[in-house]
Image (cartoon, rainbow, N blue to C red; front, side):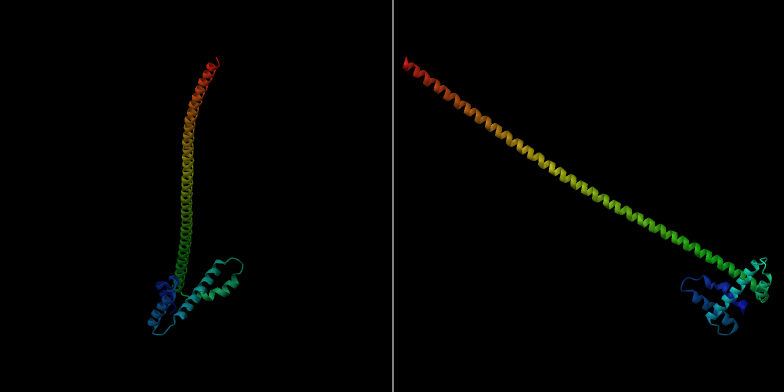
Length: 208
């Protein structure tokens, strides 16, 4: 049954499902084994037994890597029974499962890191676009403000020019009127002086 379980795990790969599908995959594994052995095997029992076999194999593998560290006797006591209990086909399947799971985990990790970098890049790009948009809006507001100020300045300058023109026109009119008035006064003074001269001349004649 262990061999059948390992084969089903290798085929279905219940450890590689998306979130929410792992339980369904383990139910598929358990259903297939139950059908082969004509017995009802709960999916959590199949999962727990597989994890137990996998951990035993990993422990044995780690122990073999520690060979030569000076604890050979303790390692043999703990691992040799577990290793001897497994047949070559079981060991090969377990090794394949360990390797494949590590590959899947590495692929998931790489994908997660890639997705995170992509999100960071998008957030950075989005922040940059928002910043640029804010800068463009601020620039337009400054331009509009400058244009408004320019319009206001131009309007003020035009008003000042109009005022100066009006003032100049009024001054010119006043000077012209003053000039005409002065001319009339001069004429009157000349007439008065002429009449005065005539009167003096008449008086002098009378006195002679």
